[in-house]
Image (cartoon, rainbow, N blue to C red; front, side):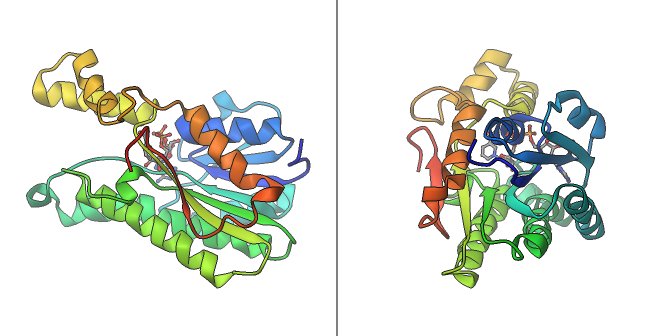
Amino acid sequence: MYLQGKHALVTGGGTGIGLAIARALVAEGAQVTITGRRLSVLEEVAEDGMHPLAMDVTDEAAVREVTAQAVAARGPVQICVANAGIAEGRKLHKTSGEFWRRIMATNLDGCFYTVRESLQSMLGTDWGRVIAISSIAGIKGSAGAGAYAASKHGVIGMMRSFGEDFIGQPYTFNSICPGYVDTPIVERNTASIAERTGASAEEARDVMVNVNRHKRLIKPEEIAAAAMWLCNPLCESVNGTEVHIGGGQF
Ligand code: NDP
């Protein structure tokens, strides 16, 4: 229970990777504020130690207000997990400005607002961890997903830079870069591939399974294990870098 009494904020904490991380944090004694746009989803999964709050990460004022509300209820945010994200692909010539902005607003602006507002309280404490969920698409090009890959590259640049800003202080800033993980994002991709190509659901899912070189989807708990490692008191020298969990992709 090495996180007993610590307050963690997990955006997108009601589903998939965020939920797995929230559960792992609670198991180590943290009080976890879970956020997302759909309060009903958060309320449905919340267990003891999880505190649901509706928050749209694209809305700067909402991130400021909801984070302040969480801090007032449970104390300074000492673990910030900027996980909320959307994954949609378009080839360059089909990428409208509106589509580009929507991806950036969620994946990049949302991560920035979340981390900045969490730091308001974290910096008054003597220990903090910031973890952003980037992607393998944050370290290499991704066919048909330029906006998504750009947003996830941006997340990595942000964490590396924040790590520099606070070097020598008791806070760390790192990204986790997953390959395909078995979450609602993959379910939605499966449906979309099947619809576009006429493939069966199994064939469509295999498109993603086969991109992971170990030929299986990664479990959300595998990502949570990495997040927990980054929260370990002995992990303070891991800062401004990325943990790759790509099933052999890099
Ligand atoms: P999910 O769709 O389950 O999770 C995304 C979460 O983000 C949801 O809980 C969603 O809640 C929340 N969210 C989306 N938009 C917003 C918004 N504007 N404001 C607040 N919350 C929002 O999929 P994953 O768990 O897979 O995704 C989590 C992260 O992992 C994402 O950043 C994704 O890019 C990344 N990732 C996922 C991979 C995968 O293969 N699954 C691979 C690599 C990275 P709600 O809709 O209620 O707002």
